[in-house]
Image 1 (cartoon, rainbow, N blue to C red):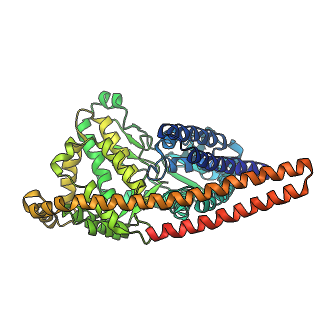
Image 2: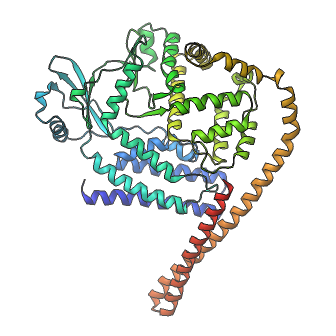
Image 3: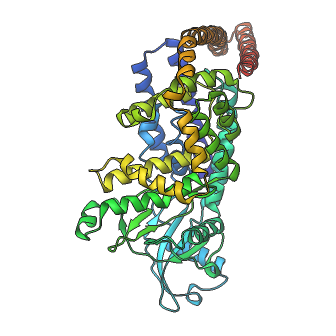
Length: 535
């Protein structure tokens, strides 16, 4: 990648980031309405989207990852990038040929009988070509884009500058977002996708894990032809599982197909191990006999044994309405930032989860999701990327289930599969059942009465604390605004002094600008220290 393109790429991204911060501060100063804020975030989202399509490469992948961070970014911004498609023009054939011959230490003809020169699919990191092995087996050859390593270095360097700036100067009211952690998680995910050896290992893991699962096809991997930049897998034909017309023509039982699809993913979500983090309809196919095909194992998440144990503890704590225990488990899972005060979390959990299981079917799930997002944004919560992937995986499959069999409620599909998993898993279902019984109203009368008596006082205390925090935060913000405005006056005075050739004017103005910059840094430092005392 030429240095001129690198500099242009960095300038384009950095200028957008700084422009975004300036506009946000300006809207805060003008005290714009909520509708005007929504319009601003939509406009910025469109500009970000246009920039991604212009620069392509790694940034499209970054945009896709940001599009699922509704816990961090405004809805207006998210809406503009949530349907990003990682599809870019293929590389010149000669460049792809050079990569293959370098990785295979020889001509392509020594490894393959044939290889089509036209890419079947082309994304920001890799391109897929259709080929034939010496024994006549059709294969899919995934090749890493020749310039991606250089692009990644440039983009990560740019992102690190933005993260540093955001960490020190971003107008985040709560101060509860760890930009450094967000950057590290983003970098870790991208670097994993860049190593095709890891994707090969993941595909082999899924083959071993689901080898006995009926009517599920995971393409075979050819390790002798695969490297860190080339992945060769069995070619498998199929149609998108959401193609309802195909399902009808093939006389596939849609109810049974939906059940089977959910049974494939349920153990991935609830048991320790790796789960498919990108199960969109292009990666989940179906064959005429109803066999499900899983493709593309580049983006995965992992649930550790401790995560799985904590999930069970969280479920038990919620069923028992033990919200202090639930808050502790959330902390152990990494949902709460270090040194966060658990008391407000306990109160919010008590209010948010104060419903009975029988009410679940009558709830507006979209309204519940929006309310939960609002709660997350108001607390020192930052969802770890692996759990964001887990949530996206579940929501994507949920959408597929509704498309496959729209006549049936998703809960009706989920319930028998979940009960079957519970029956065959190692979970102590009788222990869980007893704990669930103890959480029911007939056993919780005194607990409910106590909550009813305490709740008004708890709400008053919480509201008073929130008002105090907002007051202190506004003081810091006003001080920072004053520094910014005086600094602007100083800059204008400096330029005017140079223009009219008045040394004393530009010297005094420059001094004023320097003092304002120093003052801004001092106030920001004090604000950060104060925010740390809240967590």
